[in-house]
Structure formats: C-alpha cells, structure tokens
Amino acid sequence: MFRTFKTRPFLSALPASPIRSPQIKPVFTFTSTSRPNASMLHRYKPTITSDIVRLMVLETDKPHPDTQSEKGSFGEIVHRHFSDAGKAHHPPLGVETDQVFVVTEQGGQMPKFQDFDGFDGLLITGSMYDAHGDNQWIQDLLALLKELWTKKPGFTFTGVCFGHQLLARMLGAEVGPSPKGDWELGHSSITLTPTGQRLFRTQAPEVHLHQMHQDQVVAPPTRDSAGGLLDKDAQVECWGTSSHTKVQGLYIRNRLFTTQAHVGFDEDMVKRQIAMREEAGGIQDREHANRAKETAHLEHDGKEVAKAILRVIRTDDDGGWETVTNDHGN
Image (cartoon, rainbow, N blue to C red; front, side):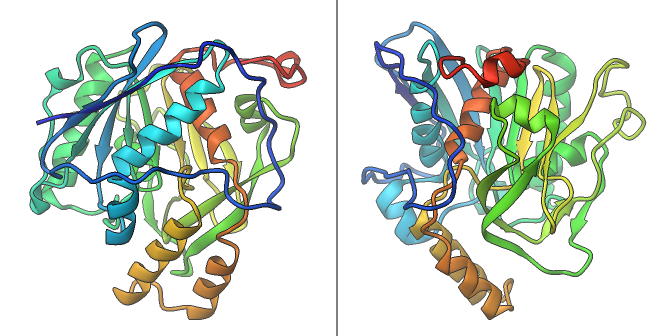
C-alpha cells in the first residue's frame, strides 16, 4: 500500500547556492515516469543508508493529467525536489519518502498512526480542496495530525499551500478565502522577516516563489488558539509576507515549517494548474491568470525553501548571520 522513493546523497559536498533573482528559466527539470496506483502508498529510497532523512508525503490532490504522465504524482515531484535539495546540504543528505494519496472520497487511503514509525517528519501537499472545509477525509486527517503532534514530540510537520493552511488550522488559526475573494497567482515576491532571512541563510530582502491560492491563513496560531497543542515556550513565527497574503509561511523551531507558495512547480506545471482552475470556474480573472502564465518561466527559490525544510527536520535550523555570510554553511 506504500510508495517509497530513495535517493543517495552525493559523495562530495557542493557549495550552498544563494537566493537568486527571478531572471532566467526555472531551475527544475524532471525525468519522465508513470504514476503508480493512487490508492497505494509507495516508497522511494536512496541506494545507501548513511545520513538519510525519511519523510512521509501526504498527497491531497492529483496534478494535471499531462503533468502526471510526464512527472508522476505530486509525491514523486516532491521526492525529486527534496532529493536535489538534499544533495546541496552539507554534508549531503539522502532523502527517503513514503507517499500516500489520502483523499479517501477519491479512492485514497488514510494512513494509521503506526505507519509513521521511523519517519523524521511529514509533508502535506497542495490541493484543490479547501483546508477550512468539512470533508470527512479532511476531518480524519486533522485528527491524525493532532495525534501525531501530541504523541511524537520529535516529529517535524511541513506543508505546502493546502498543507500550510491545514497545519495552521490544526493549531487553531483562522483559515478562509482572501478578503477580496481574489487569487494570488504565479511568480510572486515574498518579503522575508528576520526569521525568514535566518531560515534561508540569506541577507536578501525577499524570495520568489510560484503561488496558486485563494484561501489563506488569516493570522498565525497562538497558544490560546492551539487548545493545548503548543507548549508554553513554543514560539510561532511568520517567515514571510506578501501584499496579497500576510502569512506566507509558519515556523516553530525544530517542529514546524510551512509555505503558502509552491516549492517544486515549473513553467509547465504552473500553466497547467492555472488552466485546470480556469476550466473549473475557480479562477475567473483571465487577465490575472494570463499575467501569471507569462511569468511562469521565471526562476524561483523553491530549492532554497526545500533546503530550509530539511534543516528544520535535521534540527539545524537555528543558524545565525555567521552562517548566512559563509558560503559553505548548511
């Protein structure tokens, strides 16, 4: 019932890449692959077992059919993206992912608590569903996340777009449509807070990522909103903001990292996902959609976000300015 993927780390470390300006084509290319049965959970593994990060990927949607045919499921895309980020870690990290499609109303399977034994953390993908919705599979996933949060204190939680919003909801934050009902689409600038600069180990004022959302986290969760899930010394921080969305990502040291923006999208994926939402009637502002498609080719900082997530999982996410200015830091 599981899909597992492993990637071996490089034998020699590469220098850390800086945050880049959005001026050239996307950094990511993917090899063709066919997608396994969506109701099965599969495992991708590295070929060696030294210095491995094990991540459970909870797939909450399926990509555009053309993307799925060319690049596989969202879980497979996540695996390759994080494997590339692991190679840039110092020392290099192998990445192992188990992947399960959890939308039970579409034939998916909700994993059990014990299925997470031996894993360092989980990642929840983006989805067409509303993270504030009451679908049974969303309720079941929230219950599972709360159990994992309570009973696995050393476990790391990360989420992208829908996953970001769902984890915020788990901790009691308000999640809902943007006040104007508009979308944040395509290649976007995110202003980094001091926390974001530290996490990404950069002095750059902003990063650039692909967006595709209408819902958002209204405000970060608090100890009061979390209903006992946050320790008294836990500090929930926002690492970035944009003109459209105040909370672009959440961070709790050695515990949680989320991002509203997508980290592994490339030009084709952006254009196809927008087209799907236009056809479904979700995106009605065609001018906005066309502008997003026109900027889909621009380079983005998704790899830097993945590297930061791996550092959170490895509990070396508290680097300071000394690391920022050192090209050979993690």
